[in-house]
Length: 177
Image (cartoon, rainbow, N blue to C red; front, side, top):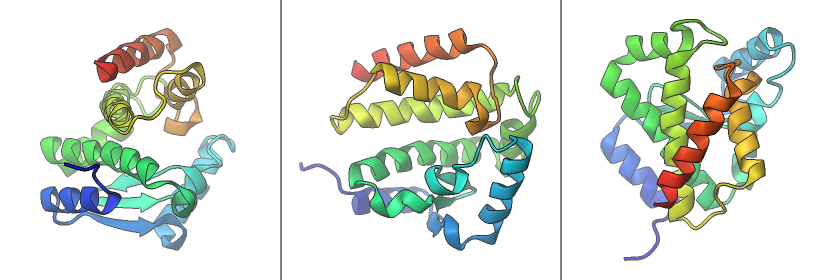
């Protein structure tokens, strides 16, 4: 069996989630509004929301402006991450998942469920990277992943950097088998 293509992965996701669709963030008024809100509440810290971050709401994956310049392997890693969020939504239900992700127990610094949900999704990203034979576990990647949790990318999800570093090391070890 050959290596899966991005189109084949999209078909798998669509088979699992019939309402799955991809939307260009640049064409979404909702994403533009969220971008402005994030700029305000993060004091400019999340200036890359539109350009660099993929966002999933429900079964719609909003693609960042850089999507067209990404390799198919990079797109597949991202889609596997986002599929985890779709599965979480299905498991918890739309309202509970959204509430837990955004607000519980607090919207910033102690966002335990956001941390939990993103750790599950980033663990899948790491597994995909290993599967697609990408570089995994280097110091720059670790710094970037840890920064997602401790900086403005996910609204300062968790203040304890050591906890996130420990998770990362464990997730890399598990991904590498």
